[in-house]
Image (tube, rainbow, N blue to C red; front, side, top):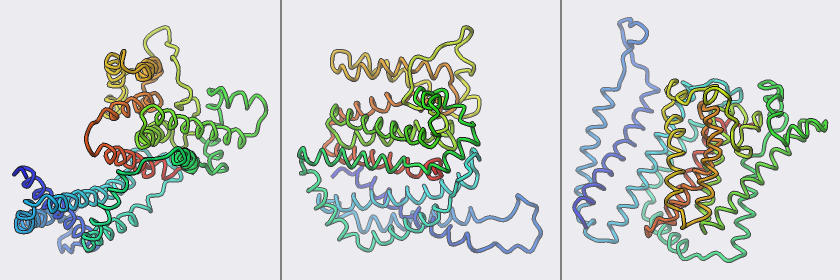
Length: 403
């Protein structure tokens, strides 16, 4: 095995183990107040950051020494190398989840927007403790986990779905989408009435037609729900038939739902603005003067760099895919052309997070490019990306507060 791989995994092992130790120590110390006899002005209270940094440095050195002693010889054996490699990746996952819990606690404590009446961050602390408990258990029972994981991985790679399996996957995905988006009708209607008095329902053809027919608001909400569930299921079916990958189809749906239905432009509930959903995207009518009521650099002006980046890179991505796929994939060309077409809606109103409503073609084309991956572990990579997208959706602050 190459020396750089051994050095990389030893260093990664030392860092992730030291980070886990640091997180546990910092959490324990958070319950121990600092006693200080001299009165200190607010904002200049004593802190432990330097002490925690010292612990981290010492822990990295100690774990690096342990790695050199425990991992150097086993790395010469390919089987033991794979065992240690899998262990290091598992430890990286625990560190990510622990830091993710801290990040969520930070966003709930210091929110960017405070417009979520149902928001509740009480799940973060139990999530942190569960991850911490599982990380300890995984170290104790690692030989069994590694053995069972390798066996399950071989079975999974050898599995070839039959038409029955495919049909069950379609049915299960539809039911899962329905469960994800199932609303508390009374609470949603109360929020929509408070936020918009149902005025925005006039912008969507279906809701406008139902309102003109004197249909009850609750029935209109369920009609919207059914249309969205059917639309996302249809997207899953189309991507699966096109790219021949369940996980890429799932990635397109989970990521699409997250960026188009659960962003702050549609807070507190996406049902309040059906006209801004991904189901109604065509050529935006440009006003006579200028390119819209909001400048294209609006997101940059309020320091939303990711929104600014996404808004400007989507047409470049569409054009690149259009030229590359010309003559190779008519479906990709059509999706790229449609993405360029509906991008005019973003130009007309390039507000923060508005890129989500016009980004579904970009998500699907991203799956198209991933399908060209030739790595031996491509199936595992696709599954990891799909599960990561689902995790990002279900832990999103707007989805957690979704009634």
